Length: 339
Image 1 (tube, rainbow, N blue to C red):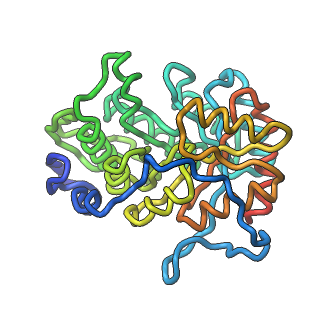
Image 2: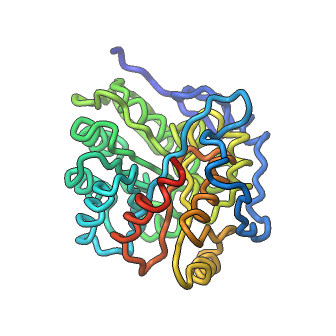
């Protein structure tokens, strides 16, 4: 394969990434009410068995919604093994690990979880790209792919700017960094020889000797309208953080048409569930508290997100919940009502 030079433009200018969607046009058409008031936690009235098993509008390609759970970074890293194995044994489809500063390392934790399990897919949501050179991350992800195939689900983002500032890695233009990094990363993981000279990413005829047999599904985290539009352009999936409402997902789905939507959804059962979620919503200034109640009520809430356009709904506990019991509950009590 001949070396390919990738040219980067400013945000909104024509570029030559893997995808050809124009960010400026996407941004112009994108409307997201990030400042809307609290989206009330409503339940679907229809019986779960009567709802459609597919998502998407009439005439669209329709797919089943994947259900997973999150292993919070507030859990001690040494507890991950029992949680991952419990998830695998219970039949959970996906376990997602966060790489929040300055807690457990996402790549290390994901590699260990994959090695300890047989069928579980493990997502990293997300790795802050200012932390790692793009060639280094490409090498790591290629190795994960060759070791564990499509069970490894990497996710990247420009990182929380306050945290990036703490480590001296805050970019003056996070969107430019994200565009350059994601474009180069995808090219490397597709086995291409890459030469780039961008503002942040500079590579000179770099090519992986051991690219993955099949490039991984690359998720890109996003919050604001411009980042969401860019993530949908350069990623295979867009990760929307907890606190995103079904109405917000529906708005995002209008713009992100070529990438899957992954939604982190706070979900709890048992006494005090509502109060815990409301407290977390206030603490993190989220727009939506999540869903709570019986497994059927949780499944009904998940169905709302599926109907809005989410292809994956990853259930998120609050700090202090038993992580092993939580993944078993998601797999054994909630998931059967979604299938």
